[in-house]
Image 1 (cartoon, one colour):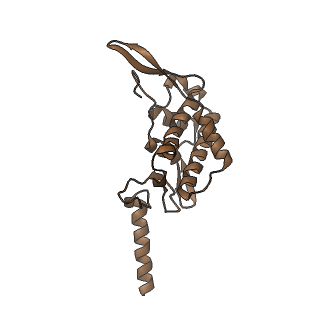
Image 2 (cartoon, rainbow, N blue to C red):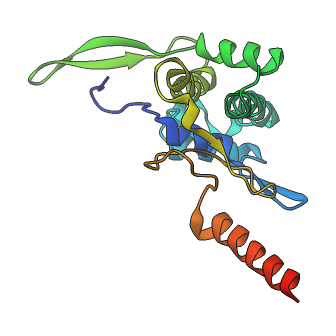
Image 3 (cartoon, helix red, strand yellow):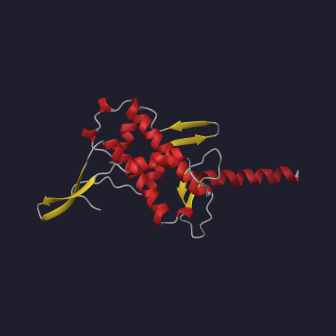
Length: 194
């Protein structure tokens, strides 16, 4: 739904970007939202919060923890959908909690008549987490959840949507993980043939 001057619009790719802020690389991991400053910046860069609603001095360790908790829950739900198993109860409780916090859509006067805007009730971080959760929930409810994937590279494990015509994509990207897998299979064949 459009808003008058801005929106906190999030699509499934944005949700996956959030889930994938914890990147795996072999035995190590990199967290894009490791610090309060990084967490605030991530939300601001995507238009999920207004700068004045989360001033720099309000972005503390609790912000990082809240984002990580929601991210872990969304990751668990995506993994469960991919593996065709039930997610943990804790993940469901957390995602359901995020969904209850949402901006309120309202009509507002505009120079040419009326426009659609919104106002926030309560915590802006809860609202941002609701925005990030909704696309995954919508895909499960009425999209193509069978196309939710987790990269087959165990050192990567990125979550992505398989939009390929056959619906059989295994890698987050053929340019990276897919090529590595093909190269590894090729090396294994060479070793096997002596």
